[in-house]
Image 1 (cartoon, rainbow, N blue to C red):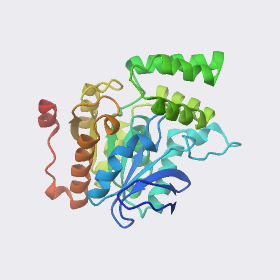
Image 2 (cartoon, one colour):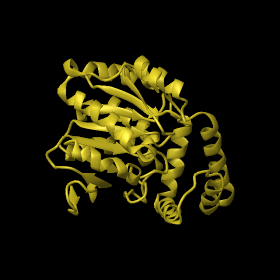
Image 3 (cartoon, rainbow, N blue to C red):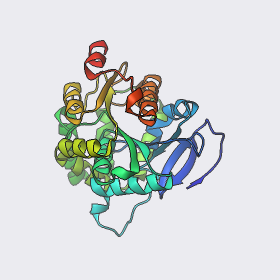
Image 4 (spheres, rainbow, N blue to C red):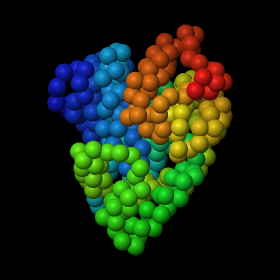
Length: 295
């Protein structure tokens, strides 16, 4: 790993197994490796890196292959962006970080995290599915993604950017819009198309993930914003039950709780990872039923 030092509490730029990353915390602390969602990047986690580091963890957020500042093989096949190929990148990153990382996958990154669990369980100490689902994206976001892919086929990448901005209801500063524009056009066009197709086609692999987690005693957590508008909260709660996972609802957040309620998100992650490190005999995390009732 290479990094530019900036103080251990403040996120610093780095690369991990060739993936562009932000990291905060001591190098010898337990590593929490965070994977962004579709069209996202490591910056989506920037607000929760310092509190995770302050809790004694090594917080590492990456761009997936082809996302924003992470490299990809320009002459290689589109299969390099497949969920299982991205999961293999996770295993390489875990090895560079010392192995047995605590993996957090947001949205599409949750599908990658699940694939890493199934194929590379020895690399993982625990897995968090954050605002992710049991299979392909559903509902209005599915319809919107299909529309943007069709728009790309008709009018190209610039039209997709304009279309996405036109339907964005979030009030954003000019600086944020400029960052989103820069990230969008820096990401691999082929990668975005391949990942989008995967997000529309991902099969239900919950049973496989549950079996691997049980065999290898890997703790699982399903968590999401109380108003998540991607996979419905009820669907995510049911997935937690099928996985035998813990479950937590993050208040004051929609589909991007790390940005919308960073303090609440950090609290949930810190409590879970600490329990995972300590072992099952000390776990005190709320049950799915209790958490759902107070959400």
